[in-house]
Length: 571
Image (cartoon, rainbow, N blue to C red):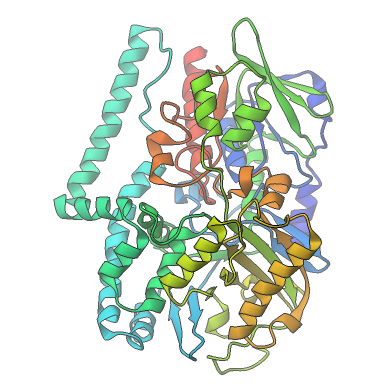
């Protein structure tokens, strides 16, 4: 049986909306949302011995990490499209490779064509990087490995933070022994943190703080002189956000360039055989093996809360079915969880106000294309039918300089889709032969900047949508003549579509901005960063919680550890 057939067969095993919920059983834990974080949390909870049900609104699990056949014969990673950030601990502990996860390493990992006929290839091969960058600057070619090595140092520090719940001040710990244990846990966290700081040393720690606080443009200008190199790296700092390269704090996101890994190799991004839905599918298999029950077509309409105790007692589905549990984990966005699902007047006003005031803005549109041939870039010579190194990694279109990125952002700030959008193009079918017919290809376009609300018109207007899509295709034509004529069909997800289809408030792929004011002890809001919430029994386990967005699974794993800790205390 092919990987595609196996995936479809497994999906059909999931129950529809009320088949399990109607049993009147009380579950130890219920998870709202079958995205990768919700599935991860469920798997760890079930492995600890708890009975767990996952309730997914859509007909397919995965949330934003999902594979769907929108055009017959072509299977798209509709939202997320690359893997690197999924925590190695999760891959190992849940045995995801045994459950079908197959990563397809990309080398080279990046290609930036230039209108003047030059191009830049980058990847995990140090010799390739040196020769490619040296075409533009010998100085930058010598500096680049030093830059990457420093970022890798910082990522070792970040690994500790990503895999740990935050040392949040606990609310309502009644017993003296409980308070003492809580203080000891925090002391242990800060002790480990100081050990990492000491290992970095003062100079590197200052450089790390500079990276965290600075605009990406300042960081990159201090390192390099080549515009196309700086622009290629700068896209990592603005991806999925409304930030520009000049936004203070955007330097932090540069760490994503090397934060992840594939098969133990730092900074290597990969495709997933079968699309990103295969990540969610592998986690769901691990969860089901541990005893988790997954329900699709099961939309949660509201949490059920005991009015006398203020504690969660379960959830009510849109069809009226009630699913009972004293522990509920929400993989939905903070806004969806606390504003839309929690009944009115149950949350503190200051908490609810802070949740509503979070930055959910999005500048992202995803275009999924079925094409009948590979794009032929005028700066490259090669076989018209076979893939070359330029087709393997992320292709950066419209980002030959940081100034171009900034101009594209300025359009969006006044409500206009960028006149020359910033486009990240990927062609996973070059390495993954399971997702498209022979000789034809799947292409992902991750496009910025597209504001949620337009100054003129609406994303619901087919004319507006088609006009922007053609703008993107025409821009690619400038680099790869004839590209537009290769398109068989396409699927477009503007910010309102991402919100409606996948529950991403404002269309924000990270469940909320990833600025320094919204990370670590500040995520989702100050005072509530440890996955617990003001409602007893309700936890947040999605990307809106620490450590944030991306297909990491860290929020789900960390949230599960907190729930398990609390469950043991109550027993």
